[in-house]
Image 1 (cartoon, one colour):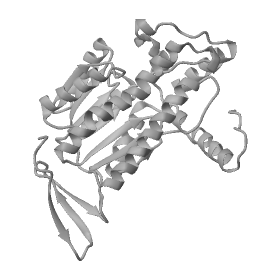
Image 2 (cartoon, one colour):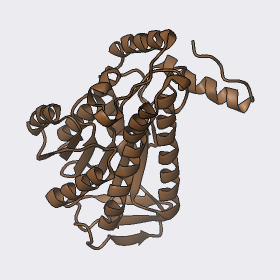
Image 3 (spheres, rainbow, N blue to C red):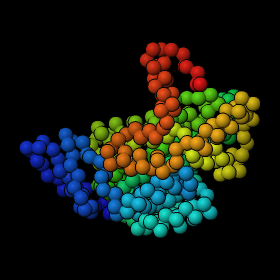
Image 4 (cartoon, rainbow, N blue to C red):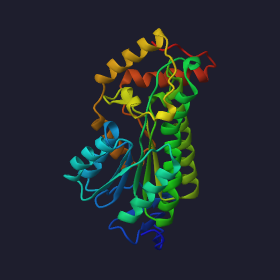
Amino acid sequence: MAGESCATIYRSDDERSWILRSPHEVHWTKVARGKIRAVEHLRGRVAVVTGAASGIGLALAERFAAEGMKVVMADVEPAALDTAAAAVRAKAPAVLAVRIDVSQADDVEGLARETYAAFGAAHVVCNNAGVAVIGAVHEHSLADWQWVMGVNLWGVIHGVRAFVPRMLAGGDEGHIVNTASMAGLSTAPFMSVYDVTKHGVVALSESMFKEFEATGAPIGVSVVCPGLINTNIMRSSRNRPRELADEGKAGPMAQTFGQNLADRLTRGYPPSEVADQVVRGIREKRFYVVPAQPEVREAATIRAKDIIELKNPTPRR
């Protein structure tokens, strides 16, 4: 499909709008005031999800399958990926499972090549893989920074670089979904590495949204900022590569914070709640998707108020 004619465009003067029909899709998309509307119909389209073997990624894959989408599932854990893909195959028209390390540009480029070889397109791309470490800024090792930055931030960068040019060349409406966190809208003690990466994902996503709006690209962008979600994120060290195994030594306060956070996550929203909100966000072309508890959202409000009033950061309760 890549390389085909972009679209046939008609003008409706009385409505002062554009109507765009993709030559290889079955529905119409109205572009009001020059703005391309959301991807409303997902059936038969192609979704790509990284970090798809568990947690939010698996929930996204399952939800896209339920929508009738072909699903490309990518993850660094081969056994878990095989199990997850087998379950999703029971629901999806087609599933492609690819073992990749999103911190490696060549792996993500290979994922894009395999996706287009199998299905000829990618309509929804979810850069979702993520890991976490806990500790004070001065306690973290260089390897802590390299590992978490590699997965959480570079993984998103690699996904955008690999897929967006292909999506633009294909000419279809599409959507990029980047998983950040409420940690990308606020900060907490003992989470500096994670917070830095998630703020980076929010900034990248905002810039890309503004660029697509300015250029009229037919691709929407959402940044997902979950709150407390019941996932295995606090056990992500199981996938830490050997060459980055040198962990920082968290002090007593950091360890207590980490244990409390892990306990709170077990009482968090199920990953399916995130997936439901992501699908609604895609259909509504909504940038901020924030499946977070009210008390967690409040941290972003407090931070914004501190900035506006030029106050020192309010300590987290």
